[in-house]
Structure formats: C-alpha cells, structure tokens
Image (tube, rainbow, N blue to C red; front, side):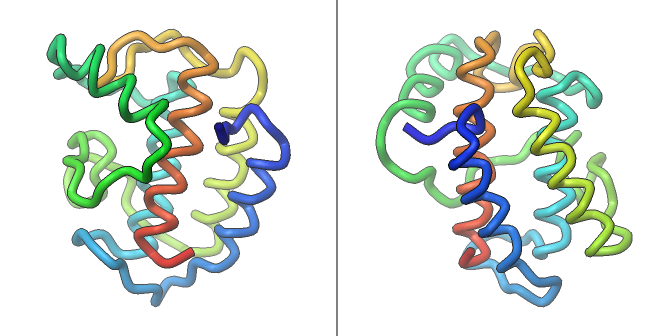
Length: 151
C-alpha cells in the first residue's frame, strides 16, 4: 500500500504534481487546479496541527468508512464532501500565486511525512488515527485530487 512514509511514494507524488498547471481542468467537482493545490496544503496543515478543523464523524465513518477508505485497494470516488475549513470557496486558504502555492504544498508534503510531524488532532471524519494511518490517508488524498486533474 502506498503511503507518504515511503520516499518512493512521495517522489511519485512530486512527479505527478509537476503535471498540474493552473489551466488544468478537473474531471469532476468544482475546484480549479489552483484551488486543489491550496486544498491539499490545508489538508497537510490539518494533519500537522497547523489548521484546526471541526469534527463531524459518526461511528460508521470512524470505523467502517475509515477502514474501507484507507485499506480497500480502490481509488476514492468523486464527490466526497469537503470540510468548510479546507474548502477554498469557504474557509480554506485562498489561491494567490500558483508557483508559490505549489512550492508551499511540496514543503508541507515533506513536513507531513517527517516522523513525528503528525498532530494528534483527530481527522474531521475518521476520528483518531495513528501516524501510519495519517500518512496513508495523506497519500490517498493527494492521489485522489491528482487523478481529478489528470495527473
């Protein structure tokens, strides 16, 4: 299973990020490519405790949905709702300069992958997660949005 804990998986993500352009068009959803870059940065800020989020998990989401999302070998489906704190049309970080925002995402990706960098803050949907689960989630989340933009 791919995870941000592995250097080769992070390298793959960095390579795929190079294929994203400001004019890249999403295959689903309403996010622009630039908003997606900022959304992913906000998700790593959440993972490392730099961006607080409100929690709305149910028992089913914290157990069954979490396990299926992290360990079932299928890509995440389109249309997963985004928390307001990391939604760029609501409370998320607004896009400013694509190159600078992309560089920030790459720096946050590296930070989030450092051992001990994750914050014990619960995931807003999946609840409490181990460091290994956060790193797996981080890979899957980036992969989901890169697929959204054909990268």
